[in-house]
Each structure stands twice: as structure tokens, then as C-alpha cells.
Length: 91
Image (cartoon, rainbow, N blue to C red; front, side):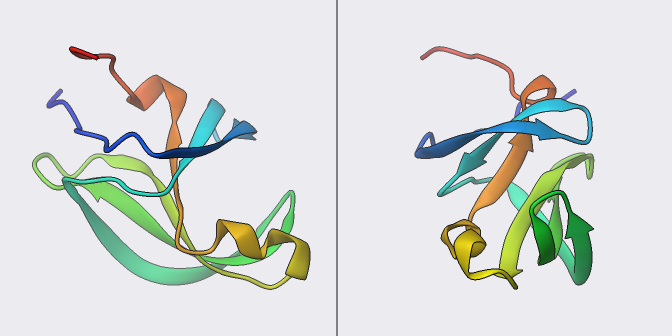
């Protein structure tokens, strides 16, 4: 599996995602975004765009495009990557 380079501007650690622990990032690189979809999540309704590896096309997580609940607005424009998809490199 190709290595995804992540520009580590970690915003928050999330408690869980689809497959366990995940992290919220301000910036990621080497990804492509899918179409926007409205999705009901544990924290309420959000518009998200799934993100994929630019090289292999593997699903990596999602980008929060819009949060419908005011208390969740801090997530807008940020990216969620699931922990098991992140590989520690030379850092």
C-alpha cells in the first residue's frame, strides 16, 4: 500500500470513526475528494466529502464540508483520517 503523506497539523483526536480511533487534521496532501454527501453521524448531520489516496484510490477518510449543528462548526474544512490508515514514517 502506498504511503500517504500527511501534513501534521493535527487539530483534534476523535474518539471513534468507522473502524476505530481517528484524528482530525487541518491539512492533508496527496488526496482526492469525492462528491459531497449529507450524512447523519453521532454528532449530528454533516455534509462530507470522502477522501481517497491520490495514487491508489483507497478510501482514507472524509472532509467535513458543513456542520449543521453550531457546536460542530469547528470541524468544517477539516479532514478525518482513521488511525489504522496512518503509517508512521521518519518523524
